[in-house]
Image (cartoon, rainbow, N blue to C red; front, side, top):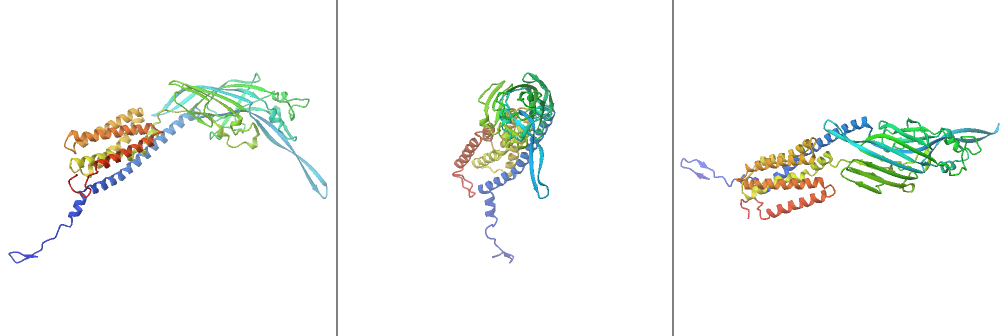
Amino acid sequence: MLTNEEGSMTTIDGPDKKAPDKKFTKGYTFKVIMLAVLVLLLLIPLTMIRGLVGERSRTAQTAENDIMEAWGAELSEGGPVLRIPGVRTVETRTKTEKDGETVSITEQPFTLVVTPETLAIKADFKTEVRKRGIFSVPLFYGELNLSGTFDPSRAISSLMPNETLQMDGAELVISLSSQKGIRKINKALWNGAELFFQPGSRDLALADSLNANPTGIYAAIPDLALAFIDGSEAGQSATGQSAANSFAYDISIAIQGGKSLRVLPIGKDTHVEIASDWSTPSFQGAFLPGVSTVSDTRFTASWDVSYLSRTIPLFWQQSEKPDNISASAFGVDFYRQIDTYSLNIRAVKYAIIFLVIPFLTLFLLEIFIKTRIHPVPYLLSGIGNIIFYLLLLSLSEQISFFAAYLIAAAAVTAMLTLYARTLVTSWNRSAYMGFTVTVSYVLFYAVLNAESYALLIGSIGAFVIVALVMFLTRKLSWYGDEESV
């Protein structure tokens, strides 16, 4: 404490207490913490964009479902199978003290379901893409041919002595996922005789595990009873008949559907051939095709499935329908090579890695040119990078994904490069921003399109970025000194 000329006392303050805080806020450690906080804050709009992508995807799915509802839905086919009604006679004996033993006889109905000995399914479809607004869905139409033979002898011989079949009530049933897909029956022959099909699955929905609302068609078979008369009245049990009662069927249905086709290998021996003018099929289900050919304009595929390879029995009673029938289904999806919304969702998932790149570029420029950059330019650069995902989503709904990606990436790269020029002293230095962002978008596109190697490419890219930053900042004084050695 000192005394001035007027005699008043003057206090001399000690060192500025705010100096350490001020020094810390100007240091690189504070800047790194600030950048981390900005990245976390920018995750909020990224989450909102991801929700927007999901919403647009659901809107597209709704539009697709509306088109499919009017056209015929995804096609699932099971059958044909024989449905033969019968009666089980049950005798019940009751003893009473007054009347002695009484006998009551009841008849219980049952239905025998018989699968074909051989089943050949052939489908040759043409395709088209229908649109509603900006949304589209691949549709197909053509002939579905079912042919082969039935031999019910084995199934009939398995009946109990008290079980009797009503052969004159036999029906041929084909289970389908949608009634709307049927255009007409081009041909329906049973042992050379014409069949008349009616709508309905007769409570035998083989496709019920493949579709929420199964239906089908059925036709009465009037001559089946005559084939099993063996000195007894028509309609009686045919137990003991020979296995020579073979019946041929040949059915051709003009049908349509969309997106996918599934069939059940319901025959003892099943042969399936599917062909279409679609260039990007995706074979799905329990069995892959034994032979397939895919070209730029068409695909063909064939399957051969034995009953020993599946879980569907050769025959059963309808009340004891086997479980997991759908586990044996197989077929093809009319896959679109580029699924816009799945790629957009994947882009947002990897956004956190590529969001950091503009921040790191500005940070390194700040270090090497020794120019302070305010947090606001960092924030604006991050927002500019986030706008890329909005541009990508909106443009990819109107044009191809590659063109949308190219336009969005070029626009954001140019914007960030021009903005960096206002922050640094020359075009040469601002070009580092353009180069870095361009490389990151090229890498990003590789990650999006290499689905099987996306994790590998992304992890290697992240490793290279971290290693490069570590190398460039290896001599940096993190305590806030101005010089970088």
